[in-house]
Length: 105
Image (cartoon, rainbow, N blue to C red):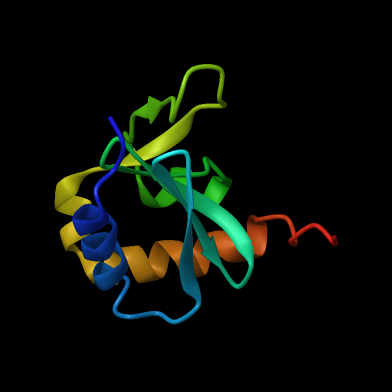
């Protein structure tokens, strides 16, 4: 089931309007970028982030889930955590230094 634009818009709003957070629609789902780096995605109306050390530390007990069959597991951000927009901004700030730089085209 593809993710809804309504859920995507809600997640983006929870990032406090951070202009550095953008999305790209891909096969009915949304890839999430910050400062040009991929940090997660919206899959089946679930917010998933890459399991880097900062995300593991800030989301203790987060379940690893597959965004789609054959993909690497990612950490599920619960709906309660999504509503804590301060947490999302802190999570993003902590994750960014650990993410690889965007690939040159």
